[in-house]
Figure 1 (cartoon, rainbow, N blue to C red):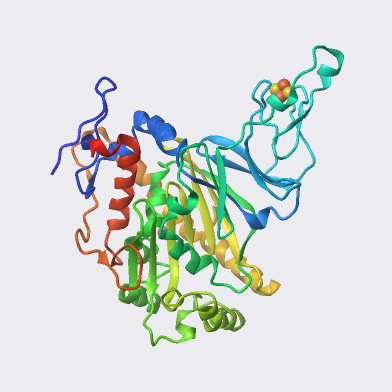
Figure 2 (figure 1 turned 60 degrees about the vertical axis):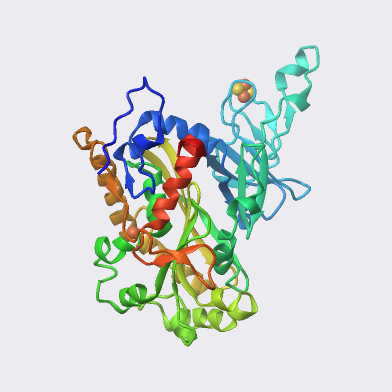
Length: 434
Ligand code: FES
Ligand code: FE
């Protein structure tokens, strides 16, 4: 076993203090160190593509949503020209948030301190006091600062502060195959329903991310009252689930149903779903070949994660972002995703199912949140600094797949997490220090 040392703030950080070579051992400090947390803000959140909104939330000019890029509050808005802008939500006069609403439609944001006014896309349009003063202020210089780049894929809008960042297309790489299998599955696409559930959680931001990237190993155990080990659902998962890493840092886990499986078997619904919802989802599967490749059509019930902090859970129709606030604190945001063309009564049934399982009052969310809090507390025990965590399940079992992009392993293979921490190491320490 490696012995990992605690950073003392005097020596330069070295990745070998925190991870062994294949990332099958990960130091507890990765989840608790204040020094690493501060570095993550600069080396990951200031540089990566970050999910900020879904196009279904921004249908008309003036529509906006508030979001975060790491710790930085931003406004995502649709301009009169239909272009999406991402502006830092901080007044150029003295720094207050000019927008204090979650979402809506506006012609102007008015800062509460001295009432400078801004278009939703960030341009400064009014300084009340300037009318009585001279010389004239050049308003074009004093708008809200814009993200360096904004791009979208499958309706998902991402932004980055990094002008040098590669295109979103390149950043996602073959992960797009897995995003497409979910977002292009439904004839009318997917839409976000309502504002996000938001709540604080006492854990490190990477813990929910890692879980959603592919932790099938907890499902029938931590959530045993919901998915019993010997339930047909869990037996199907153990038989057919695979974890796929198309690019380090991103991951997907799903059942790859056999070629001779029926459309009824491929539909993602619970035994408690109404016959009408089951039939709707079966119909989606019957027509999915019109929209997706044959192998994408066999994908069922996927969780996936986009580096660094976005997660998707198809089975429970949720999209979430883990916003960092401190080494042991996150603001967790969770949205409900709905098939846009589903009848209203089925949307309501899906919404009720999501609320029962996820969101701050959901039974699965409660269980996951409790686990992540205990995981954080366990990580903070100094006496255990020489005891890294074991991430070695399935080392070397994953391999290239004839039909699926990336490296693919069996359902309990932890390569999705090892590759996540390899990407984290690359961003935090540079490849030369790996
Ligand atoms: Fe915004 Fe003064 S701080 S107008
Ligand atoms: Fe869970």
